Amino acid sequence: MYKEGGESIHEALVGFIAGCIGTAVVSIPQYYFFKRWGMLGVLEWHENQCLIAMILKNDPNRLIREGLMLHFLNGGLAALFYALLISWLDVLRALDTGILGILYGVLLWILTLAPIHKPITGVSITKHPLGYKPSILSLIMHLIYGVIVAYVVSLWLG
Image (cartoon, rainbow, N blue to C red):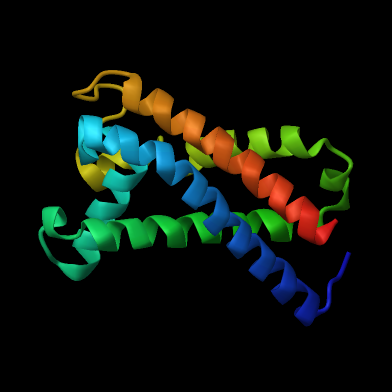
């Protein structure tokens, strides 16, 4: 189905805002684990911190705020694509919102974290110095994020 440009921009904006909300919610428990395990223990934060360090050509340990800003930007962009997919593919609207959110969270984890974490950070998620705990935390946070995004988008876009 073809959408007019203004409608797609509205849906993209709704998605971006939903992603920032979801990112804010999951950042609260992530902060607890950051205090417990350090940056290495929160995979998304570590990844974003290393990415921003590459972009700015600076020491990652000096870029915690910038890494968190990138974390929110990535969360917003991921949900922007979710909102556009939901609006473009009517078949998805027939599925339960919670199930869609869980599926999207798993998909994001598989596509955006599992294959790129080691190349960006130098740390393998399968042979992580802290064991399996950071990967489990990351997957749970992606599931929560996905459900929040799905519900916020469904509230605004119907």
